[in-house]
View 1 (cartoon, rainbow, N blue to C red):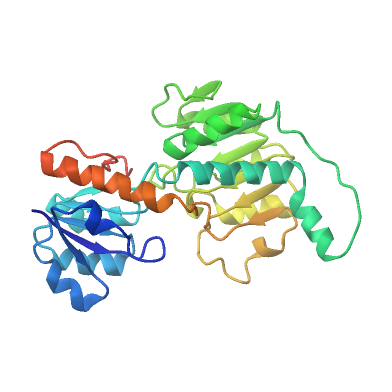
View 2: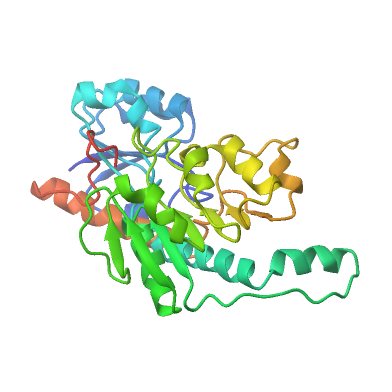
Length: 316
């Protein structure tokens, strides 16, 4: 019997069905810090990425061997040295978000092409005015970060008739992509992009990768779409490019500071579409998360390799 500590309200309440799915294990549901003493024997933890909560959980679980987070990005966890120092395995929730985030990206792309954000503004003003639309078929999409999520974006985009160029650290083949380049070619291929999709994990190598210099190489009509981490883009440089109409627009789900401050210029720029870091929202994410975790518990107890194990060196 394995003791598993849950300290998570993902996605809004503690995961239902955990005890039924893991009947042979001891499940410790932590509601607040007073429950941490109950988790002393836990070898497995299911928790988020907030530093304060994570540190308290680690301090309360000296036997912890494996930590699973319902997040896809683990950059904040890797900032905590205790994980590496104690040899704790980290797994993430990659795969549980591919469908809904890729659909969110395509909604951004189609909305930008058909000027839906501008029509919405006109609707608020009761204004009837025709705008010039674009077709996405035959346009070029550059996907920066072609992992689990970026790969699904590439597949959907190709099915919609876009020409896809995937940018990934390891190169190789990406289903749906007509061309795959390594990250050192990013500045070269962004000049071809009608849509630049930022889907890379945040690492030392990707922080600020969409720089002022990279943005300067883009078409005046191109759109930037970010569903990854805000700090992958130089936000000030992006704002300048949008204000000066040196790029066509930006559709952003993630930002350097969240919630996005009320005084951010991004709120009022007409060529910007904002969603509040909700591209991962789906009524089915709970079941995919639980299925992944239960399978990994089985693997853990059987001594098999875990799915979605994070590499401390690459950062994902």
